[in-house]
Image (cartoon, rainbow, N blue to C red; front, side):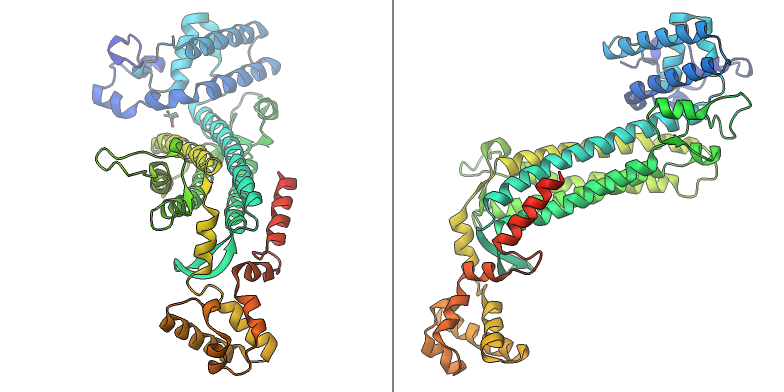
Length: 467
Ligand code: ARG
């Protein structure tokens, strides 16, 4: 929609007298942000409306002018929403595009809107409002994913599966327990976005260019109108920092990292070698050459998205590093990175929620796999400690010898005969076979936060109550 060729007004004209010539075309290209910051239009108009109302309440502009500004801004808003707004590159950014259009619509009073304000506090306000909305959006998307995981966890609270360390079979766990591990991770992500939101909720508006203003403004009034908890206490800081965006990006990066791990598990689990799960058709693609293929593309893409989100985080840190107080144009580079990271995270969360909701779990395959790979070796060692009073280190050694015997025989631990076991340690009795089954193994893990189905169900209930 942006078309500089048709422009008749440039930002140099907006600041008038000092500039005789317009900018070089390349200067205009490097300087303009309207191509991306038009996304802040709603926040920009909300900020201007709050500012104009405050100026009138303080007697800085007349209520007639404030009313003209208010109505003009609503017209601008509807033009933008209808896709009829003439965005102009020559006017650099969303702030000046809106103000210039306001002037065309209402004339002279438009020029009073920028009293006691600067684009520096304006952009800081707009961007903060936008990032604040994204914190809310992230929290609802994460909550939806947690809910999908809770459904899986509840259904499979007692489905046994292998638990892994080093991606080697370690001990049997339950499907529900595994799902709940991600619920915990995402729960911390939720609280990170909530914390960031609470910290960023201070209004920069009224900091003006950097030093505050000589007009008798009421920053508390505009802060309240925009849903901020309070005005930012230092005008230099208010226009100069972007740590609120960095916190959002850091929280997004951690969340995207969590998603990438779950995505990787879905890729592994849906492979022909595992077959733990089947992804629904909705979340798979075929191959143009291999008819048998069902590729987990969505999971692979989610696994990759952390690259973009973390890339944006590193970019903004690099942009901000070493900038002297206060505003520098470098900071215009904050937006594209943050926009892309937010879009990427929301898409990844939505796709993951869909995949988890539509997942078919192969319970039998999970159970069969849980019983293989000597997964109850630790249960056997614990039994030797508990029943025969062996020191754990000796029990570990005896168990290792039994695993080697099973390996030599080509069977799993429960398939060894009692005689074969007694040849390794004469104290072993028939009762040992009770602990070699995977169901008994998981049922015995009753320590708080352990994998026993009762523990898993208790955690599911706790989360359901919490949400
Ligand atoms: N487009 C600018 C940005 O995004 C707005 C602030 C411009 N302020 C200035 N003093 N040039 O950062």
